Image (tube, rainbow, N blue to C red):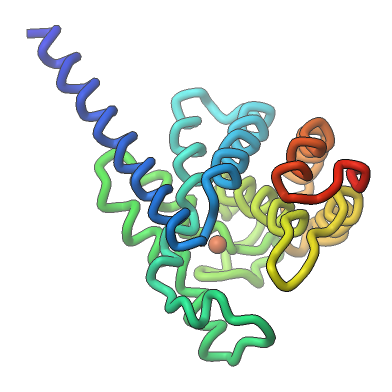
Length: 214
Ligand SMILES: [Fe+2]
């Protein structure tokens, strides 16, 4: 009997992991995030979370939140998502709904309720000016604060079709400049040595010359 329960638990976990991979692939197909990008984000998030003493039994939720926080972008029309140049206020509002869409998708999976809340709050700002809830400081879940910093760094250093990525140094400078307004200073301080260690890999993946690193 105990063996059967264990077998069912393993099947359930394997099924859930396949679903997560499938969603990740969907994001890749929609060009919302690429496989390398999201795996990297998840690794960084886990390392920051461990350094901030987030208990091991919550690390899985950190990984899922880092991988799938933007899954709700599937609900935003491509014409808006990929628009180059300034957005109208309606277009901006449509994009800003993606954390709620992410939440509404992830919460449907038994066992991912916690990760769905982290996804919901990944665009909150430390000073309360973010969305969707305008949460402030430590009212924002710590995992959402981690995803916010890592995602911003990754977006800054990645090349986009319409602009070249920033250097590692410039990206770190901008993170530090926005601590206490957009980002949690403790999370930024924890992330910097990790980013520094991995900058060479990041820039190789982002398609930037490694000589531009640091
Ligand atoms: Fe997002």
